[in-house]
Image 1 (cartoon, rainbow, N blue to C red):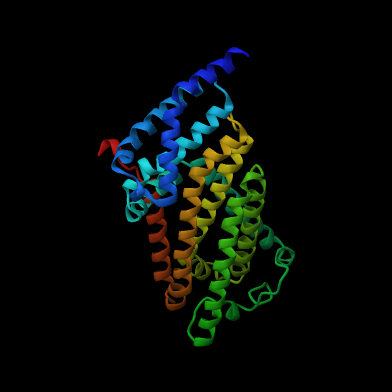
Image 2: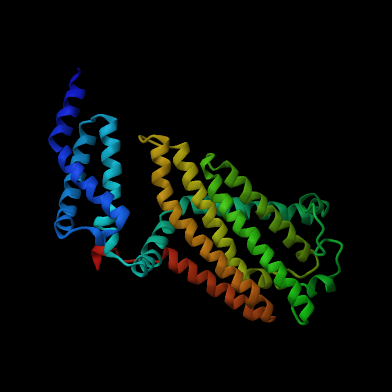
Length: 332
């Protein structure tokens, strides 16, 4: 029997009774809730948890048996929820998420966010200039039929941007619901496919940028660029920002897999996934807000100036919310 096995055996023998007590308390709390614990168990829970965390720290520092490490990591994670998690109500947790966790996760992911924005808007610019040079590129990119195409007249294209009669409003309402569903799918896929080194995420963002850029080129060529910009960005600022953040979350996962550093790939991906999950949850909420702006604001507002004001205001709001410096909890 080598020295490591002997150390691991002695280490566990000296502390295993306390671990077992903590395991029993946590198991009971998981099955019946914290209210089922006695006063003695509630008093012992934080003490036993701190001892388990201390044991885990020691076990890691002296490189003990992996089975011991895995057991302690799982036990500490389970106990953490009942020691700290139950102190805050659901409302308090949600407030913390919106006040600190979500903006902190987004602001910490500057590089993945810039990379996602480069893929999306870079693809849009390439497609835009290609279509301006030769509109045959539009038909290559857009396989399905859409009345808003290079063959459409100025008047027919302009009519799609303003909802002055009920029939058009109904049509655009259906289009808004379809577009929200489409973009939600893009956001989820951009995040979920990140584990493949971020490559599918990049392809997905570029493709959707190409689609957007070619669409914009049609209106630009007809002299409707300003009108389309207001029509698109009254909701598009929030919507495209959300897609960029979803892509950034995917790149966070992909970067952790591609460059794990001293960690294992699984551990690196798990750590990155904690922050990426905070980003993608908020991105889905942003898509919901964008759907409200698209389904109602864009339908009811036909003023280009008002559309631009809403677009600029939403951009300033999101940039301030995510990137304006905040005082840390320690500074308060």
